[in-house]
Length: 250
Image (cartoon, rainbow, N blue to C red; front, side, top):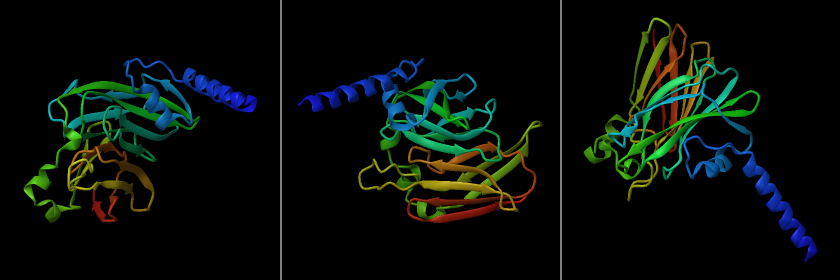
């Protein structure tokens, strides 16, 4: 009995110590502590103004919410992880800059008003977090995609479109992949989404890697700054093992 009580006291002390290490949330979300424990608990977490997340205050279309992330003021970035705390599927996307700038934009589905965070893991094993609140009428994750309703999604599955242009300071790349990106939360429609996108140069060097999750918009469009002249090879795979590829010649 005494041993059992000692174990309980030890567990309680550990939980309290862990809670004290979670920084106070400037956005005041009741889900913040749970998100840290679920996704960020392996490393120290700090809020950092150098992680810039830009999104509308209100999502006019809950299935297509634009968001951009810029963490380029940080160095030694290993991973950028986006999540929406009140989504039924909180994980939105992971981005690995590799040889690209640590900045990108895309659109995603939001279910209800929620903080949307970008957590940036650096080489010193610290999560640097920035985020914003997005208000929303809701329902973005539990509605069928437009292509599903039209019934022609399979005719265009995996088609890749791309554009490259010079902004004057960086060379920007926009990539679109035709895919329904089903969340699995619509009756009769299982989860079906792109799991990974790799961008490489002609020498095989990895420029950037993206791991989308179900909340990314259907027919996702990603804009990023690769800062690389020459051709870019795109390879993607979804959770049904469908593979898609394309080459941007520039």
